[in-house]
Figure (tube, rainbow, N blue to C red):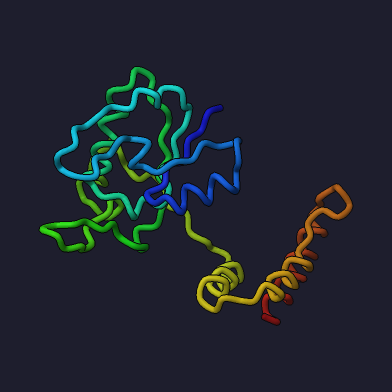
Length: 185
């Protein structure tokens, strides 16, 4: 299956490319869909998108409705458009836009009412972390910035499937050990 991950910024695209290597093609939205940098550039449909079975648009909170219209326009021109998965959190950073030489935020597609009302491009499901201990851990990693040693110590106690066969008792034991490790951070 040919999958493309398209990110709104180069740093994300490069990070995913490093992580996944040749298993996944990664690029920026602007390069992938030929989104014009300025008003003088003409629109260009990327017919090479036909080779993909799936396109993942990552960090959709950084995608403006104007950029998404170009992306959707490309998909509408393809004779066999891939499945498109849009990922992101509408409470994250909103896209930036330059108007009359000044940079300001604008509405992302995840907060744009026309995007959400259009049945062709509807947000079907949003996943949130439900486990309160895992939320506490992710908040710790995001906001407290643990040291590499703290992360290493936490990971040492979280080893799944040492025996090669995963059973309920091993899952429960791992959960209890990780919970104690988390509370010690």
